[in-house]
Amino acid sequence: MYIKRQIEEILLKDAKQFSALALTGPRQSGKSTMLKKVFGKTHKYITFDDPVIRERAATDPKYFFSTIDENVILDEIQYIPQLASYIKMAVDENRKLKGRYILTGSQQFQLIKNLGDSLAGRVAVFELLPFSYNEITGIQKLKNKQKNIYAKDIFIHSCLRTSYPEPNINPAIDINTWTASYFQTYLERDIKSIYDIGNLRDFQRFLQLLASRCSQILNLSALSVDLGIAVNTVKRWISILESSRIIYLLNPYYNNMGKRITKAPKIYFLDCGLVCYLTGIHNKDILMKGPLAGALFENFCIQETVKQLFAQKSSAKIYYTRTQNNLEIDLIIEKNTELFPCEIKLNMTPRLSDASNIERFRNIFGKLNIKTGSIISLTDKSFQFSKDLIVPSFKDYINWL
Image 1: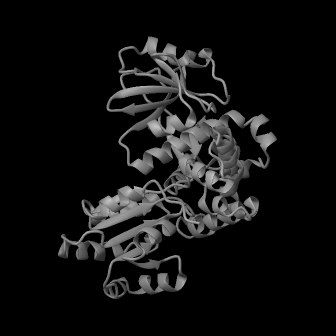
Image 2: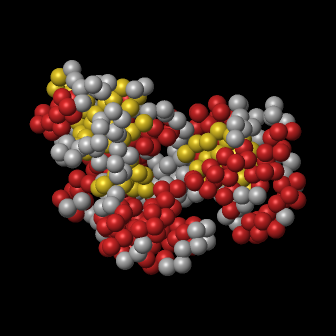
Image 3: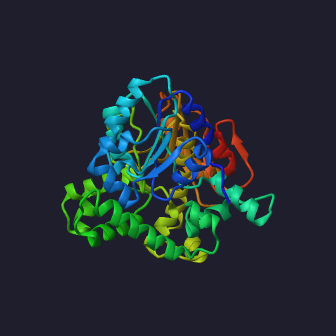
């Protein structure tokens, strides 16, 4: 079963305008499957995950590239960064030929750096994250033959089964076995080989500690002390997890808000199912009633917001804010200088009091261009408290972005 991805239409459009496309995203997010489906009839497929092909290309990249005489998908190109310069020369020789090279990589920072140096202005860059809320909803409708799929069910499903394509499409997969294999592959192929991190056990402990602190403000010093490693090591490892799209750092909004604002980012995983695996949450009761329930729902809301914005290549930006007086807004969405403050609450029936911080935010920072506030929850029916405060269903919230 193939599930159409939201990003496909934009990919096809830009393939007619750019000589090369670059698609990044975490391992197993569906990059290769989607590209084969969308471009399989027009492009040859080559993957550098294959050690034989990787060795051949690394030994003599110039000759390897000379053997490519057709439209091509080059999968996991971060393993052979030398090819970028040859692609640049080929593109410069024939600027009129569009969509010739489609490149993918699981290491976002490294791929973009290599491409940015060699293919600036010639490549359109996209990111594909695991299945989004709308994509998982579509799968559940097909499988269960139900007209209505509820936000609470999608949240629980995403936590206990991840949002990665393979375990969503194939219900026979044991999720614990799959996730263990996922992390083993990630550690062996990416962390050990690309970044040369020797002590994988410490890195695994680091991952587990971060998972237990999802949706919290990033405290580098505390992580350093708890793990017994240097602060610079923590910074490097955070950067690695961010570049491989395991985590997302949500920066604070402090434009024109003075010095009273927390400057550190908050940390989220881009799949709350990975958090559940790393923290030992394997059933619904522990998920919904355990100490991480609220943090996991907040993580879920941020991950789905990021997925939707990436899929649309949206120019909207997202932040949080916290003042020294403990006024915190969970999520601020900035669209064309307009600010939409959101509070995230794990419940089915939000109350007006759940938005008290939005009202305080509006009163204290009235000079900002603050628009309608929202309470993001598990409600499946949108309603409105006032002209300045709405409670959208999760579906309506995602589609508004």
